[in-house]
Amino acid sequence: MEVKGAKITKLAIMGGTFDPIHIGHLVTAEEVRHEFNIDEVIFVPTGHPPHKSNINMTTSEHRYLMTVLATAANASFKVSRLEIDREGVTYTIDTIKELKRMYGEEVRLYFITGADAIHKILTWKESEKLLQLCEFVAVTRPGHNKNELLWQIDELKRRYQTNIHFLEVPALAISSSNIRERIHHMKTIKYLVPEEVENYIKKYNLYEYRICLTPQEREHMCQYVSSKMSPKRYAHTRGVIEMALELAKIYQLDYDEVFIAALFHDVAKELPVQEKIALCQKYAVELDAFEALHMELAHGKLGAALLENEWGIYKSAVLDSIKYHTVGRLGMGDLEKVIYLADMTEEGRSPYKGKEQIKNLALYDLNRAMYKALSSSYNYVTNILKEEIHPITYELMAEYKPYDSK
Ligand code: NAP
Image 1 (tube, rainbow, N blue to C red):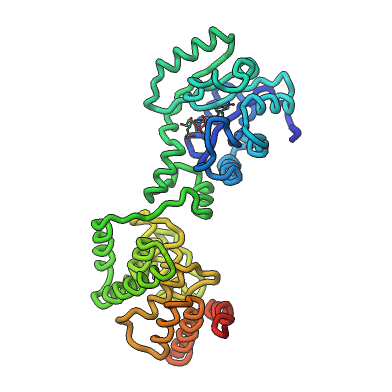
Image 2 (image 1 turned 120 degrees about the vertical axis):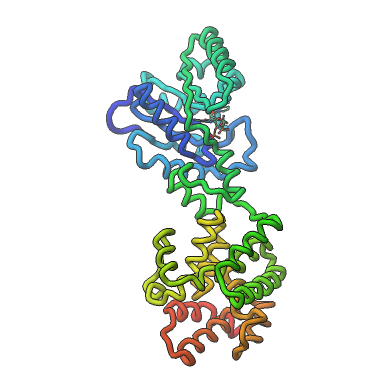
């Protein structure tokens, strides 16, 4: 990598695992940039640090891309692949030497890192040389024992004639482990990481959590759902739960995920239209053109929005199975198919031609059952109700048709 543009005389290096990067890191980097009049802050996600096993670490590519997304809006921030692309164990001294080569020997380097690193600095590779080549900025989060750190800094400065700075950053009350923990416990991380990073984490299901409901939570959810619907609709919901859990055993799906998806699939179905419209606005629910004209189809997306925003559950497989149980979508996962089929075949649903066949097929081939279910819906809407059907149905029937002739 060659360095282009205006001459850089002061460069700060923000080294860390960034698993994931959060607002605390960004505030820290900006604070250092301002405090020390830095030209550029370069974020260097770690590769294979010497003191850690990589077993539980998110892949370097994910950590790198999240760092890129988080820093893109600040012209003074850059991200380097130096460490993640380096083979073997990565040592800070090698990174610093490489940056000196790239930016010129005269560039003044500041290495920003957590205060804990300072306590261990003398165990790092070529630590004395490192202390000569760059100045350290030790940042602490609230609650850190400052006195001990300041004593340590004085000691290092005296012994190695080096410059070590200390900065207390209140925003570092946030930590990566805390973010991971929050995701694990299905708590929101909104405003703790940049929105782009939040979306990236969701998209790739990083820090994947398992929903684990207590009997009380399950009961509480049931009360909430039943309060939103008539006894008849709730009886249907219980039927969907029963059928979906039967399918969950066959297809080895997570019990709590299936339970929640089935429980919430119709939670918004009987809400008055005005309330549906208001909720769409409140939770920025995007309806397609057909759904906007047929508000009776909006309850899938609305149900998912209620579960996400009022219950803080954002497991995408669960939300998608609620969102798309009305008309389906291309490339549905097993949980989505299970909810779709359980909705069509639960015991209490009035009998219709083909119901038993779809139910029996669902027990051993979800795709064949999907084709029959879609054909049945198509027939019911277009030939019996004589209404317009959602255009996705044609594409879905084409997607599942090959399974029918197997
Ligand atoms: P880490 O495991 O990611 O972090 C340890 C603690 O320090 C965490 O509480 C972390 O908070 C905080 N922290 C780390 N970097 C930070 C930063 N730049 N700004 C604010 N807080 C930060 O990181 P680490 O293992 O201590 O490594 C930090 C840097 O030191 C990396 O660049 C690493 O390569 C380098 N290092 C080099 C050697 C060596 O060369 N021998 C040995 C150890 C470390 P969060 O969890 O919230 O990030």
